[in-house]
Length: 80
Image (cartoon, rainbow, N blue to C red; front, top):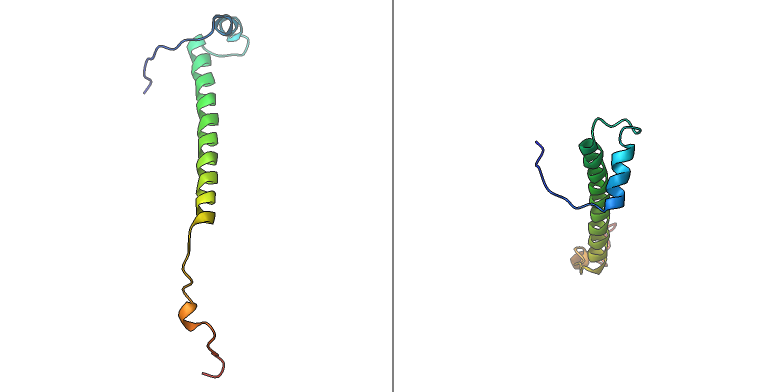
């Protein structure tokens, strides 16, 4: 479902879009603008995922961990 929204576009970009959307085989100017916005949103989502992934990796590196084998370290299991 599409939601109508008002956006502001630079005048020279709008004029360019009006001139070339037919040459680029879009059905309408609205479709051209919609696809341009979708492409930008996809790029931003990728960038945001990468930032979150990087932040998570840094947090993993800073986290303290417990040595779960500390209680049995040094025991000789072969002679048990």
